[in-house]
Image (tube, rainbow, N blue to C red; front, side, top):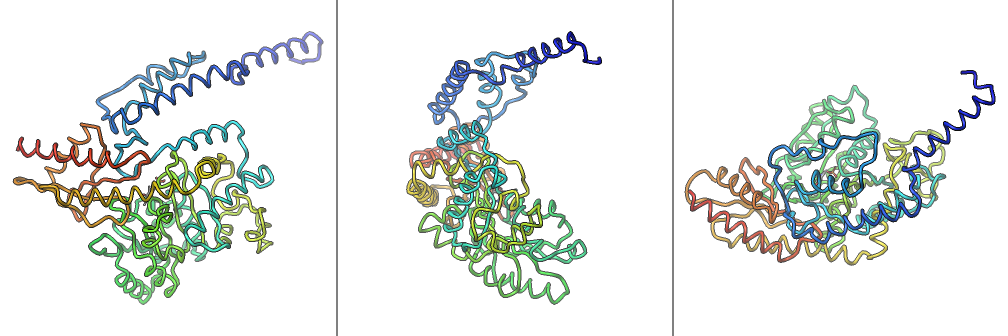
Length: 494
Ligand SMILES: *Cc1c(COP(=O)(O)O)cnc(C)c1O
């Protein structure tokens, strides 16, 4: 094709016009937008209307081919059919996240204002990675990080990153710790990390991704409430240093996933200071409780950590996709993640204004306009309802613990540090582990509430994690009723 003749030129233009028309469905006009949007919103509304009427958990029984039977094809599919497929193939099975009865793992919620914010963020699609591209999106993000820093008592020189979740946030913290201590490959085998058997596996994963698989892990013994024993930790640090190792990182947890235990952060901060270690606090679940009076007390010392992780998609009730990491000395975060050395010329950048781009403080370059899903609900509702909701969850957990303590046949774990309660049934006959396994299966099959289990000190243990926005007093009463009923039934069946 030489493309030089007038005829060729014309067919070329025709083809372009043709393609434009064929691609038109991707850019609907206002009438089409309204029709589609109304259908989608109607679906979302019907979901929310029914959310607490649906089971908190629906076991997937066998193979469901709804999605696979409708492969991606050249041609369009009718919107009603698409929404039907979504509902059948995805929404109706598994965990009903955001429902009142979701008391397993760490429940998430689906704050409505965040969902609308995600819509607006996607429609406007501001580029939040670079300051010049959207100064406003970057300011919004920095303002939210500052709000979190103030909440946890971090200084004005701290900096942070809004991430997709707690795992990535911990990775950012650990990479920052690695760079701050100038660890080189030759040091990895003698770098020592202190953690607990209750530390989230995201910490171990982050260490491996950060290249530190060979680092020495010391699992510090815990007290009766599953918290790191600081005096044992300090002895271990001293011993390791004497043995020629390099004590480097304390990975503490503010609210373990299993039991909600909060490590003694103030003591750990003292040790980190004294012995020159980096203190990373995984507060993915627990840190948002700093909004409450009780949380403020129990989290004391968090302000002296070197890095801290907090998941808005847990304790601030956002839909999944929101974590955050804060680093006390913001420069350290910048040093570990900048992509342009010239930014380092100006030592005061972090304190001086808005010039630092998230791309310089984060593993990501292009990223969603993530700030809006937190900013919009905080602005629309104010902080007070968040504070109240978290305080409610703390009290519900205490209530549940107290009630289960008195419930015949059950034994409970320690009073909850935060909003997770552990317990198990002690059957009159037979193996308690096997009984509790059958009990949790019966509860999950019932589906009205969704609880999960774990192993604590080798024992099969049940747990209730109270954090869903919609979990209220009646949900907790219902959970107790179901547990009582199922345990009785299993006892009868022998
Ligand atoms: C949930 C959780 C994580 C992991 O965070 P994601 O957001 O799921 O990546 C890490 N640590 C603790 C204590 C958690 O509860």
